[in-house]
Image 1 (cartoon, protein in one colour):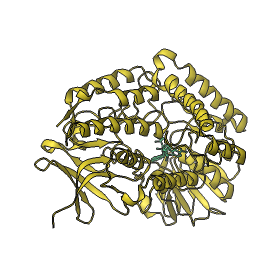
Image 2 (cartoon, protein in one colour; image 1 turned 30 degrees about the vertical axis):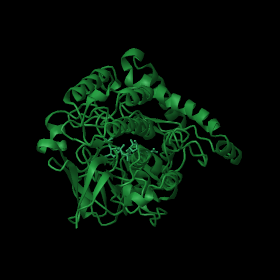
Image 3 (spheres, helix red, strand yellow; image 1 turned 45 degrees about the vertical axis):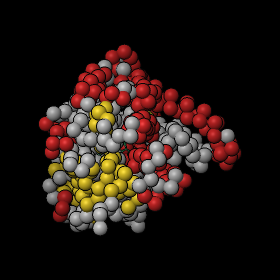
Image 4 (spheres, protein in one colour; image 1 turned 60 degrees about the horizontal axis):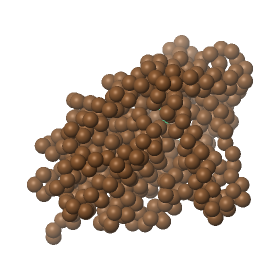
Length: 495
Ligand code: NAP
């Protein structure tokens, strides 16, 4: 039997993969498959379900441009609601029937003679497609720290990205490692129930209050009947976040860190009014600029440390023993549960998340490491025909993943539209266009907080292991969306 050749294979059924699928459908493709390693869709919003999970971008902005959701219960919605939104969108656009769950992709190789991608699955099967789109997300490979003794711990170990919903923290003695955005949401939940909670902080995080409001039934009815009303609020919340990224991150040179100072003053005042102990205030204060690392929003994180049962341990972890954690200051916390809020391996395991081999045997991961991390407009790479990588260097726009998705869908629209118009079957970005984009990103980064700010001690995942801040696309969302709709088609070889 002749092998089936798909029009396209999309790797990942999170919001990136679902958006790419919707775009392919709009372009008239129907014979495509989404390969998803989990048993359900939603990506990070399916995998993460730890207590306290909520979005830290206003939900009026946290949706596809074309699919506002009138059902959000509040301005900063919960993880459960966002997962529901992913389900609703996938059903509405009939994406679910294209998804193959429990399917782990091992690698993809461009077959030059046949002009197709061969995609190898765990278990030995190989699928073939004309186009390959990887939508593997930025935060999809959980990081388990290599701490001496960790494998010998005899209590319960839970990574926040693999939360056990049956776990009850009531009266437990818990140690939690990490103080990133996840820990900031989880710590207040654990602090409420645990008999004892020790928080292992390596790098303090900037925390500002969260201005959250519920949406009344009336507001939801209004959003449903008059989507324009919700869009109007989106314009405001988009503009606010866009302003923050523009002023505090991208145009540091022009604004000379004034916004960053104001934001850190706000965080300082917030610490001052919420934490009684002066020494604790000091130890929770970051020594790097606001904006070097993704800041967090919480109305309950700092307050948790006022409880007599919650302890901050910031001397570093020496080792883990079967019944506890020994810190560098010699003290030992005896615990029955070790929570790893240690985040994700962004650079080593994720760029790329699967092995991708293009034309002339070029291996994407090796090439990025031997040269520099780069991808034209955050999606395309020379020597990789018919391939779009949505989780690329210089792809992520500011704080909101949906803004990244918006420009990437427009990029696909322009590119695949042209391929179809010409009756062509192959596209590949030119080396010249890729170099031009990389040079421009490098130049723009020169004006950003990552070059001009005090970021050395931030340990921020915005920086790759070589110390270059190659994650964010340092421009406004409007500019990225405009470029995605107007880039010169001559930037691609189309044949
Ligand atoms: P993260 O920001 O990478 O934080 C990981 C934490 O673990 C850091 O405090 C890190 O310390 C610590 N850590 C890692 N390895 C360690 C080790 N060996 N020893 C001691 N400490 C160690 O991960 P995350 O909190 O899961 O958040 C990741 C991203 O997910 C966020 O930035 C955000 O973009 C997203 N997120 C969003 C939401 C939301 O929308 N509401 C919620 C959660 C997460 P160092 O800082 O010293 O490295």
